[in-house]
Image (cartoon, rainbow, N blue to C red; front, side, top):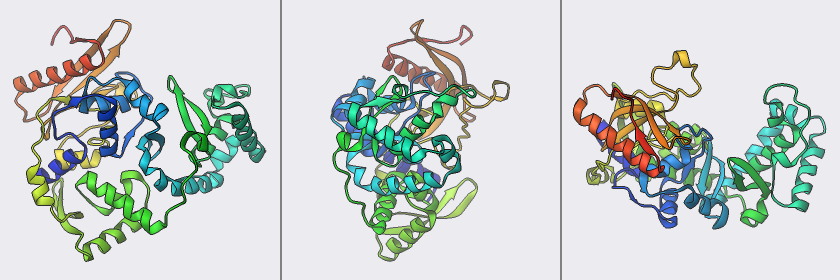
Length: 387
């Protein structure tokens, strides 16, 4: 399978193959269901990543539309995939195995045990009983110990207990106050916990859903899509499905290699041929499903991208919050930008056109992508004077 086919299958799986549709509660839910989950991130330099992921696919999106699904209709829930994510609600039964594994892992983890404190059982019981009696609560509603160092209270015993119980599925995120989590008993948020499916069923579900969205993948990529199964389990599933002729082994082109062992659906050639990538210029969040796997991004799109928010300023090559610009199946540029909400502007600090891309056309398309996002955020677009 060549790069072009693999790119197109991945773009379709990420919902970027069609013209952005008008945002509504219904269309937001359709995007969540198509992607499976949307990664959550707290950085708001431009806008939080989960909102940017929806902005890229929908016109007229506002955060309250997503809040409706997580806090009112409960058609989505927050937990972990490869990272913190908003997940389609009908996948909840498959998360029961993760709850159990998370609880066992955290009890073995010295870091977590240290933060829970010596009386960790009592702390867990106290937090559970307090929420049972008082209803939804945030970390700030529990006692804070004297600060022993920068950031100490953020991982106080009570904060640690809340996170432990959430990861274990005993608590759920009821809502958010700004970006602060508000917790409640899981049964009051989502109802009675479903029974844990058989492990073989979990593996089949996780690998099948990953392959649907990735289009073609190695066993490792299937495993890492949600971090729900091991590479060994994913590899065994691929071989089993290949023997049953439900998937086919393919040679994937990854960078300079053309012989990377992977798997795809039987009809992958026809599926790739049907994809006509939409030409709307769009800015993609650093954690958009198309770009979050940096190695795959480089191999399939020849686009070398690094998120530099946590890189010391002197060592950044591009900028604190640099977003790629996608047109069709090509990354044409990247821009360093920030929302200045006090001034009411989306400030573009710098822009870089990718090598081999016609400069004039790329500048026009990048301007269009930035203007589209500014309009989505209800901000005026501001380029540097030299632009």
